[in-house]
Image (cartoon, rainbow over all chains, first blue to last red; front, side, top):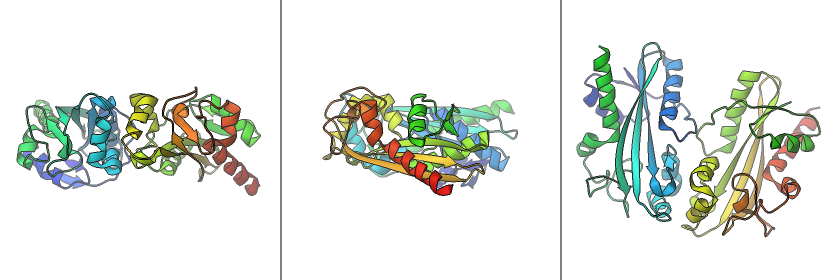
Length: 179
Length: 179
């Protein structure tokens, strides 16, 4: 199966959860503007399948902040690139809540190009300061039940509870049920 | 010529500036995620031409706020829908500047599908409170040299100085030069 992504580190995590080898392909598909992560991810899977004509998975992640009425959502990459994590914290402070939901959608195109989508959601809150390492907003997202940001957890700790692993495990169960 | 838009009020303004009749077609083309308004508009023109195979224009508008390092940019529609104009003002107040640039890109697909793009830019600032009527962020954008928001100006006053009319006039000159 193909994983369409430009982030190499996703390959091993995906292989570990799914339990079979994954081939990485970087296609640079422009994402559509929508606040619906399933819509963005499904569109990407359709366009990737149109090019590759093989079973594949893509993913998209959304960070919905309550104080920003669901923004940045699927536009999180642009918020991080333009405002940085500290700029996002400042925007959150204009509201009354620090609650947020991080959502990953895995979309699978089967051999015939039929698309199936799987969601993983982690509730949490936005930190007062960026702490730890990691990709994107990892350093400012504290998952519920924890006192550390995703950026402060080890990669292994994060992968166990992440929205991506929740979505991948749903996909794994789907594949089992299809057999 | 076709104007691809779902906003009927754009038709008369376009006809008034260009000086010939325009046919409105609503295609609902998903916009791509990019902070480059020319890229978003060009992509829309290509997709519209692929469906219609006729000369057409599309447009896209971006509001780049200095305090937000260029955001919301092409994502302005989502900021207005999720935060409202008052929410945008709150975000601006986390920064040190109220300056902003409103940019419209008109993209023209000619009879062969070749794309030409024309930019109109209006510099201004974000108001302290929403004032006046109008579409989107009209009520919070004060153009340079004015003390009123776009929303407080009459439609005629706004159309004379708007980024859309600047871009349309550039396009009009291009059409003349092609004859």
